[in-house]
Amino acid sequence: MSVEPVTTRDYEARIDEQLQLTKTEIEEISEMLLYEELSRARIRDIEEGVRAQRARGSARAVRRWTRVARWANRRAERYQDQS
Image (cartoon, rainbow, N blue to C red; front, side):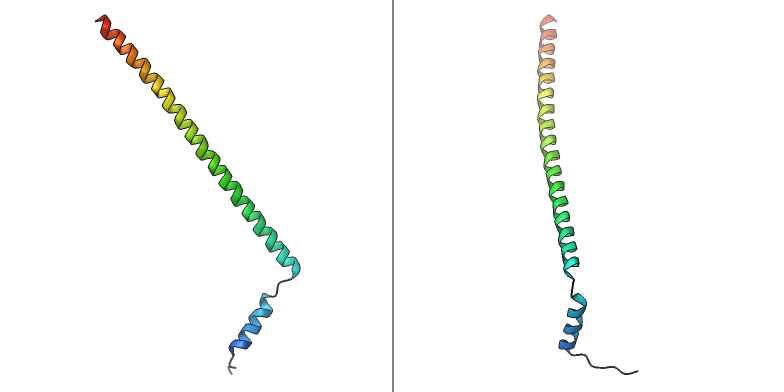
C-alpha cells in the first residue's frame, strides 16, 4: 500500500472538478432558492396577519368586557338604590 503526497494545489484542483456545476444544475438551484425565499415571505405575511388579527380580537374583547362591566355596575347601583 503506497500513499502519494497530495499538495494543496492538487487537492483544490480535485475539489474544483467535483464542484463544476452545469448550467442546468445552477438554474435548478436558483429556482429552488427563489421558491424557498417566496415561501418564507408568505409565512412572514401570514404571521403578520395573525398578529394583527389577534390584536383586533383583543381590542374587541376589551370593548366587550368594558360594556359588560358598565352594565354590571349600573345594575348593582340600581339594586343598591332599591334596598
